[in-house]
Image 1 (cartoon, rainbow, N blue to C red):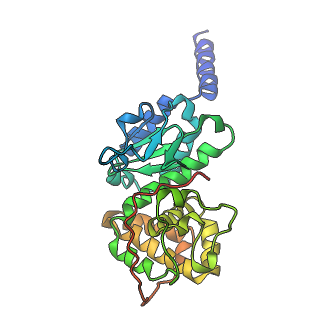
Image 2 (tube, one colour):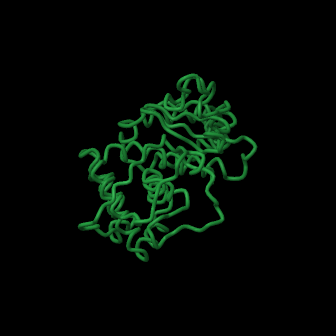
Length: 288
């Protein structure tokens, strides 16, 4: 009789585990423990990035509504998928938190995310739950915003990247201009750009390469095999990630080899560089 009771109890535990659904708070806590960083939502005043504070009495150039973890289930799933790509300990070398806000406006234009010195912020739009929008925005957003922190540590890669830009190219004059590009215009693959937003400044170009490299490596591999400038930029991108911290070099080399990206990357060689002075503020990813 005792054996039957034990079997029944074990079976009920099994059924409970099958139907148990992790809460958003439990998921964020699990991710925080796994990746050694906080994942939070709530009052945006607690994580407002200082570069957007108003100067000289001017209002802030960034507006963020608040949201909750409960409304951010799909964003959390996107964050989790993105974090799985990186070598253990890499992400926490750059940031100590991922914050989730509600809708975000930068200079009046919709934005999908931004970053600060030690965190990234991703927008979650509750009305778009169930459409895959928030999942994709967070999945790509982690790669996009984190890549800015690698970009800032890779000055020689940045200089070489400039040498691959068309002579007639010039950066967008503001975040608003960058975020309100005509999205009906297709990417300029011939000149090495993966999206119209990536064409707005060098950092954004690098950010878009990060999105593709870590969320759509097959597509980036095909594009690099077809377009020489994309292949050369990809080589520089790989260099930035494999050299930013020596202890993670092997992990990234394995990733780029396993995805086939290393096979299609082409070293730029000697390139003529026209230095484009870009003094614009931080530009976040667009809403896709």
